[in-house]
Length: 179
Image: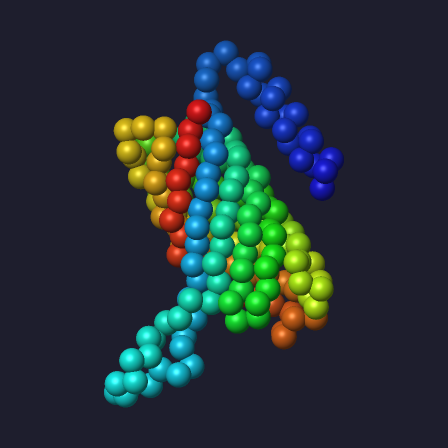
């Protein structure tokens, strides 16, 4: 994994240094995601003041990447995930491949794919694999700081977990800072 990261960063530096015309831009991003699950205590028609959805996980993510020709972006990300139901904290490290389906100036509607590792902070579970698929919208704000909104399906494969998987869908808001 370290060799791959080194090779990727070296390739980016070579690409940037030989480019005569600036075709890409580096960026930093940060996101806060919240996942929800159906409330087991909710009953239709009953006025017990139980919500239909309850939060199940919070995700804080940070990354650095490179966007090429306003179409393709690749970034390396890390963060902290906390699962309320299991009292587990984990640290994901992953690469994101983003393809902009539609762009207008700095507005972008895109699809994304995440792949990487999930490092445990709890001894009772092993490290795992992480995958994510989703879509997002980056909004033009007439500054370097661009707000984002994302919907992502997360698949975490963890050995010794209930069924070996922890899957959920999250809603996220964040910011992308372009250099």
